[in-house]
Length: 356
Ligand code: MRU
Image (cartoon, rainbow, N blue to C red):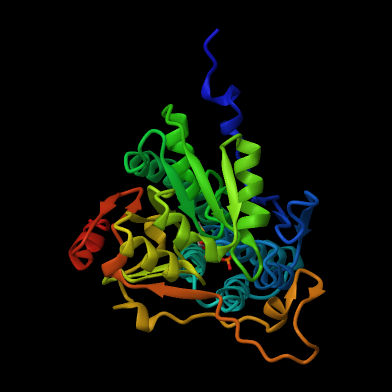
């Protein structure tokens, strides 16, 4: 009997954020892999906190969550029966967009839902709610199908038998399902290729060790966890064929903001003539941002560095710096894989063509 893809272990997928009608449901990524706990968030403030505290993380996933947060504001405001629903939607949009600064998907998604709600205002409260919910659900669906499509396009860059190195988690958990960097891996495996993934642990909050290893394990895709500082030496030993990572914001010139440590991976890949591929939906490309120097890099709490999880590993009171992202210069990027096509240098023209 020939198995369909759905019967195979690599068909494992998770949709980490869901619209629940009067609430937003989230798989709490702070608890993985030890526990699979779903949160039901029924206030905008709870959605903002969940984004800030990394209960949900990854650029497309926080965009989808924020979109649902704006829809929730409309639902909650309408249920009160008084007050201006569009104003409530706008206030929620401001709070949600400010929850984290680096991923462009957050502001992008919020703007879309707020605009849809505003455009429906002549139709009354119910029309505003319907428009906000429909816009948010549409974003979730289109981001998910974007991952499938970019995965198919990116799979062509992964040879049969390849060793892929990835950093952070750019999988189903970081998106509306399927994943970007891991979507590329997944699509290559679904196309019948044998792929092994080197998983950078991704200090300080260990998205690689906790989330990427969990996802790949569930999908039955062979993978090996390494400390971040092992990546360059794996490359030197000929053990990496291609690096595939996600992105939080891609500037018009092709500079890429992604999880701290990505730049080091790209530098090492260039030194060893290994392709460095960025996989992201078009919603992550920010043509209004000229280059990486204009991307705001989130600074997070010292405690994420002085602790590993709940365990302190530095002296009490130790000062730390915790930039959560870095910028990889466009010159180090071999290709940007999106659902609209694969962009290559010169990025000024190839990225803007994705929008036409
Ligand atoms: O701080 P995080 O976990 O939200 O950072 C996530 C990343 O840097 C991902 O690589 C990026 O958002 C791409 S997710 C498809």
